[in-house]
Image (tube, rainbow, N blue to C red; front, side, top):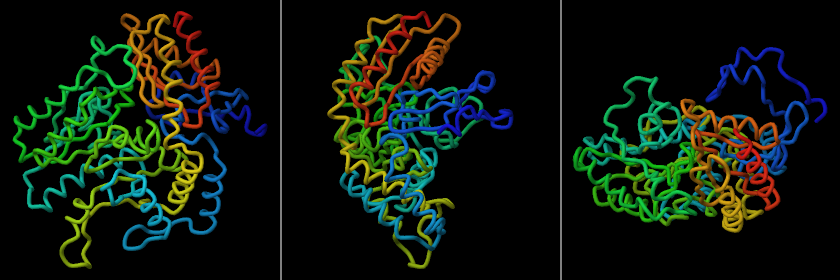
Length: 442
């Protein structure tokens, strides 16, 4: 470790960093050079407690031995295999393992390299499925305000975060959006699923009527909207969406890039809420964030619809150079092993109550206007500084980093999603430090 300390690059100019205030960062860089379990190590030798699982992805904690060893072994055995018309055993083994923990009926898997690619893959599958069924008029896609579905053109088209959309022209055509479910006036400081807002699902019925159901291919939502500030579905909301989609023959897509792989205390949020989608989008926790990989689950009905015509012909013209990459597959298999051996896919059930109590203990802190939580996800919404939106939360982020704590901010919301290996003493440290930060006139 000592060889890595104080190794600041001599020039930071070339890297245009994603979703970053580049000029601010490069004046005072925040660099990680190591990580283990619940902590990062900075270039100046400090330990930083990870309250965000990296970026919602390091569910099993950092540098887990089984995962790193699997990558090492695979790299020396088979580094790459083409995914088109060829394969390798681990890709098939992984798909079987994934189907085993998925909601019943989601029986087939397509591989991608990220959540963004997973979303675009799911949208393409949905539209192509209807065409394969002879329903080519079904081309419309319905997303939701404040939804985040990655940064590719399909994802930002169905997404509903203004800053992610406004610079990029007209985007996809035939897209509409349901209203978001955030009702702070009625649901502030709710623990778990809010009581109010389930009826907002009926807005989908209005939109379907406007366009006619025969033109709508799919609806895509995050079961819990993470990147927009942890917006939790009101009671009955997801169930109602499922009913409306089934009624009109519309595919329901769940974007579980954040909620997948144990975040709510079940392998997937669809199991937690007992609502089964037709297509399920995953990434992040699939490989514990170690190597880019995503997986899109579909029902047998969707898969089998494409399996027609001469057997030598390609059924679905879609895929990536790195679909099911051998090293990524090995990492994912070792990640699933780690989850299973340590009970991490359900551990959030055990820890959620303590997490909830600690989070809501900050209700009396300065400028806190809402707190919400579900599973091992939490958000603290702050009253914005007049005329300077996002600055209060960003100030909290900087103060937390200096105090050895990693949090994430979106707008004036602090969002947290710690590794699932978190212990109660880690939670005490997180909330103790946040109390000091929030009360220190940020």
